[in-house]
Amino acid sequence: MSFTMDWTVLREYLETPRLFVLLGGDRAAGIVVLPKQGAQDPADVDRFRAILDLNLKRL
Image 1: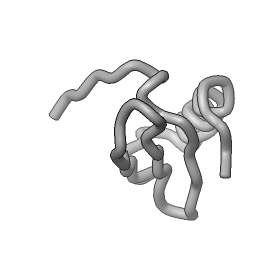
Image 2: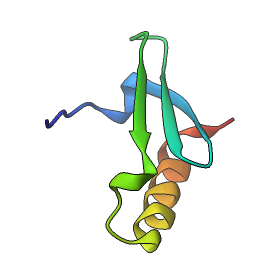
Image 3: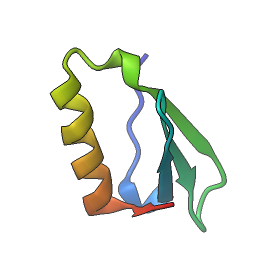
């Protein structure tokens, strides 16, 4: 499945040992759950975390 959304739809995220959980902002109520096991390489998880830190507030 493929899904595209603008960063402004999201406000913040949290990280668990197995997941990234992105939380909706003022314009949209919603949750995006991304399992870390989907990454092909552990470095991909670090790169994704860096992208999230640039665009969203970490909880």
